[in-house]
Structures are given as structure tokens and as C-alpha cells.
Length: 118
Image 1 (cartoon, rainbow, N blue to C red):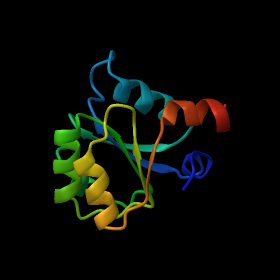
Image 2: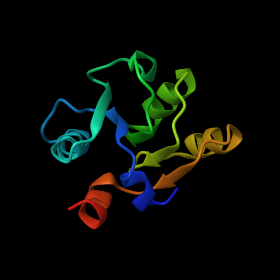
Image 3: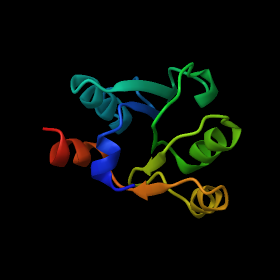
């Protein structure tokens, strides 16, 4: 998927600190909510992607890579794509996604909102 297609999806799980106002995950969460996206927050609000009751379209990694890979590996959730925010990727994450044939891009949802939604 490309960023434009990702911004057309409506159910997004954010992995990161969505509680503290100074964190990018918090900013992304509130920007997505402002534009009508369904947002599920894993890391500080939910412990696992498996805690999300409905299907999700996109997983947004906005979290330290060591915690991100842990959450990805323990998840039973399927998503159409994983977005890896700047600083949230690692060789282990890239290999995991490739080995499990999970589509991903390295990009920023805030940039996607600016380009394709606003």
C-alpha cells in the first residue's frame, strides 16, 4: 500500500504512548480522531493488539522498536498494512514483516493527513 491508500482506511491501531501530550503517538491519535478515524491505542491504553475487539485496517508503529516487535509477534490481528513511523523500525521488524508477508511502509500518518485528508 502507498500512503494515500492507507489514509483511505478507517480503523487504525496506534502502538505507542498515546497518553502523554508531548509524544507523537498522542498527536497522531488526536489528529486521526479529529478526521473521523476509529483509533485503537496499544502500549499505554491497551496492553495488546489482541485486546481490540474488532478488525483493524492499519497498524501504526510509533513506539520503540524493541516493544514494537514484541507487540507484533504476540498479535493474532491481521491488518492490511503496517506503517512504521520514523525511528520505530529495526532490522528485526523489517525481517519479521517480510517473513510473514505483512505489507508495510516507512512513512508518517501525520504527513498522510496533511497530503490526503485536510
